[in-house]
Length: 333
Image (cartoon, rainbow, N blue to C red; front, top):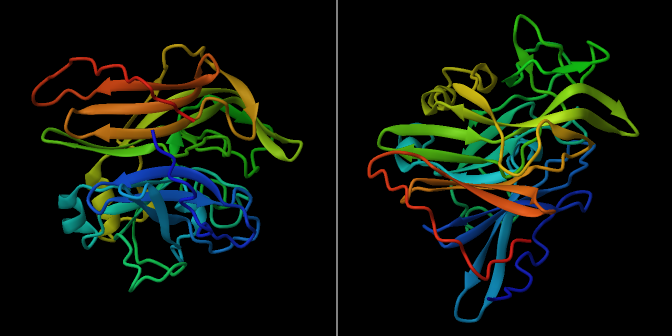
């Protein structure tokens, strides 16, 4: 329908030049297209910018990159995965009005520096003002959830908890903490990219992350971690827990998902086939339609080699279960 041209215009700066775009978010309030990006092999823990935005001019059909910003003290590995909106009531009450959040989380190479996070991660920030927040400057932020990597087995900091379906050859390995007392812990092969959203309805509230978890044997070979098989999960966090972190009543790793369950997306075979590095069937995008109460989940390679978008109804209020019309002329790349 329209080619916007180069919307980055050299603004995706990193110290080593790696600047893969991980996620996009359109902020209707300010008419901004936010992009999450970063180096996927940040080995020295550079404090890179990880979130920027562009404006799109309908009259000229051109995109303009405004800038990119860093989160000094948080690190890009905790902020390069996604941008999501926060409910205004939550921002006003707990984050000093900061109405956007960056993160998603999950391990990044090299996992020992950064730090990478062993589970979901989210930190709130205000929309940057280029006059007072110059390009590549650092934004103020309030952390909401996160699990910074540590070499100390069983922490602290803790890791996100998970099921017990995994094993590691060396119990002291950084790849995975063995299950203990009926609790499993996030491994290096449990992955999140552009995989979070906030559901805020009159009678349902939750911050949801959509990881793919490594199952079976977890090991390191040929300079990358491997998983024998895998599964999809939904992790739902209680906003009340995030508020306690924002207020300083709890450390960000002292909260866990209120509920979590495995999910099987139609058209895929489970358990998922094993992988090295990144899994095939990553969740590549999630958004929640607040008006219709519909949750959209994109899974790469889920449909005959292409992407597939699954739509879920979050029952509340009107109970409108009319299936959304199938879009036409839509190209997902």
